[in-house]
Image (tube, rainbow, N blue to C red; front, side, top):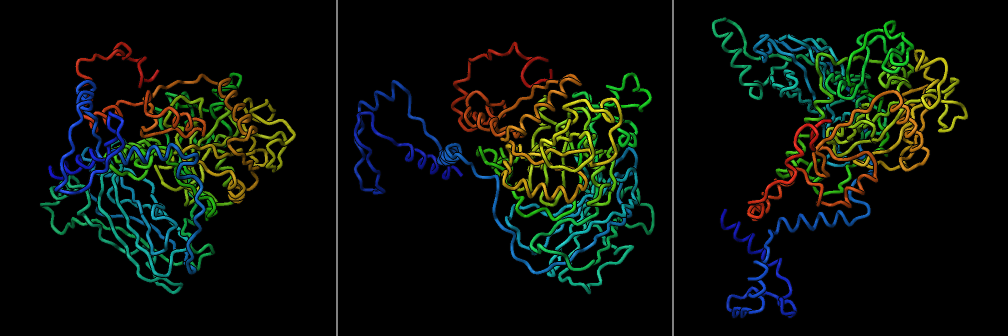
Length: 619
């Protein structure tokens, strides 16, 4: 190991040799053992004594700096729209998986002697991907509380599974929010061939033994202790899964995707809701009647008649009907080298940041006992109304940040620059640090005076919330017809920078999924888009107090800016100086230990700024 270090130091010293202090030209070092040593330059020795020894840098750090300078110098850093076409593939089949139940699970929660089990299923096939970094198809069941015999009975329909078969890996977990979920074991189901005559596994499902080796050791130790004196009790859990072929899939055959059912999930966080002052109805059924924050706060004393409310923040997931247009294909923008490390989870630094991003995503999109879910009929007005309910119709001047995944999952939360919480406006967090997605940006809902479907950003009639209209918020419940509303959506995402040329395809996809809703697509650099969002912000400020949060933000932190392109350009222009976090400063000391000596004897000048009003605290 020491030999490798000495060799690296020797190579680094050679690469840093420059012109001599006396103005002589560079001299090339030849690899010749018999070469006479170069005479020492007295002038150079004098300069070294005066200015200190020359700095030596490792080859690895030099290459990293070169790559960083190369990326910074590019007008268009790597990432954004990717024109790679779908691979050619023969016709595939639509397969319906049903996760029925599990039995004989170990108790992972000692206090209740039970578990809160859920299942995640990852489907892999021999179908080639556009890039090896494209995510696999993943399905998650709901969490059932305090049971060792869960019965999910949930379907997952996947289109374009190839005739060469599939491998379905099912992982069983015990949900332990906010702690780390305990693994209870896994099951691998492998099928080597598939056709329309495949017998499959008929309901009520085939029994599979769960592999305990990957499960929680303490859970199985507890199970062994409780069953030690009981005869004929097995230690092995069982999983019951069925799989049947529904027929041949429609093109494009090279794209495997979720075909159904259309699930929705609403994840709640009371802590975030209280911090930013967001309230929701205690009774979810009140949402369809327009009983929400805006209706209650502008109800002219009628809040008591419209149902009780509570502080809560809502993160939404909506499974849309695929396939997502293949042209909607964007990669993260590597405007800084550390961003590439983050997304790919490479190196110590990248792994730490990647893990922090996954942790943030899990916090916002956590499946707690307050999470609500359900299904809806896809591509119907019922689907449109479900989306409008989750977006709270046209109430309160809300702006949402969204990410559309390659599998058609629409994830969004109410965010925007008027929210001080930095992490919630990050497309990196919403995508769970996915390298490739379909599209991302921001959107809001507005109501027309008369019900008709239009995609005109200037419909020629008054709209709410820009103007006060009768028959809806803020004084009355919102209308229940989707024709009253417009979805104004853009590509405002610095993380992935979706190309504005693909917006018409996004519009057509959303029109297919949300019939009766007017879809308006605008580019983020369009003055009309900026004007409309500024009006939304004005309404939001008029209706409620903004809560400002100060976070320890840096361009290489685990959650970086994705609000707009100008913010990214400012970030690139600022460079490393003046914007380093504590983590970055510590990392610099690890890379250059000599700087520790320079810092000895120095006292921090900003020590008085600590406390509630200091950097990195909430105010």
